[in-house]
Length: 154
Image (cartoon, rainbow, N blue to C red; front, side):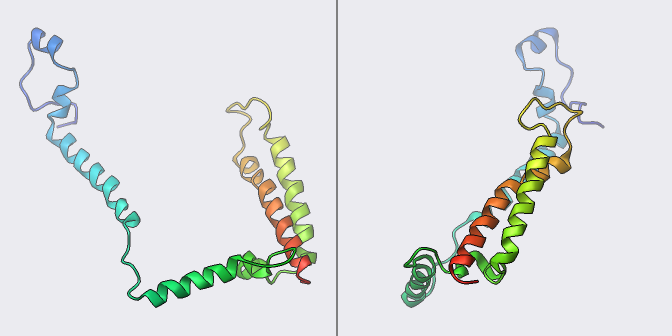
């Protein structure tokens, strides 16, 4: 049978007026199975957000706290290049500056070409322009990375 075939006997006219038209569908066994599978699929990922066990010793926690303080605190005009991660911290500012300008130019063109600032229609939306417009904030991040590296002599 299909999902629309109820397992209950047909309802009288009075029962149809009193009961919801969806009641026979809710009593269908196949729908119950689908609902159970859906519930499992929605609840199972919640385990990914369950709290994990705490570190076994207080020394592990305190050393992690010290490491976090060392990596986020600096004195002077700019933070150390290590805050940029393993790739950008080693990239020279002479490479990051042109890359930032190219990202800004391409992102600006994509914003203009996709008509984000005006009304969009189904015919004027091009996914490549929408994705390309994301280069504008990336250009800002590259600009900041360039500045940090330049301040640190890289």
